[in-house]
Length: 226
Image 1: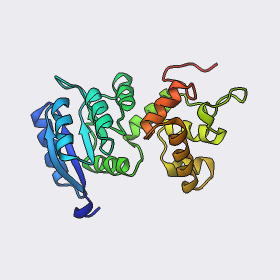
Image 2: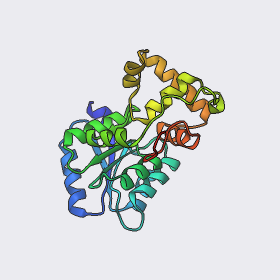
Image 3: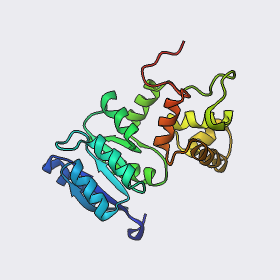
Image 4: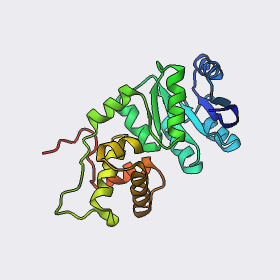
């Protein structure tokens, strides 16, 4: 990623030492241009409106406005800006609310600079920017159903294949990973996802996953399948 196409990033953390350290670290990484920093969620939402960054690196537990609420506001008001959570916590009570709020990536603060850059690049490319441990946790906790039972019609005219693709999106798979899993072309996967977005009336993968939960196409975390 050249300087001309570097990702414009805002760093959000309520601890000044941590915030400044992340800014300094990212300043050494190619492909990243840190354009601002905020000490809480309210300041982050304001900065996004003023600067229009590509990606926000978002802490979760902050005063005044926490990272989940800030993520929700940013994604609603500025859908072109992606959010990657960067937090100390990887428990379910932190992870799933952040993803439901619209975060496209989730890292813990032991991530290296290279891992942060990769997550930023992944979310800008439309993929999930998840730490390997977080991805494993999702796969363990989210019992995704490959397809709805044949006796039940999928909502909004979704085909069986589209429902299958949606379940894999919910697992956090990228388009290329879905293509390999289903043995179809990446372009075909993209077409299926565009069809899902159009039929379900959603604008991104996070909303598509919420739609799948709401319509019973996949099981929420902790649900036992009998």
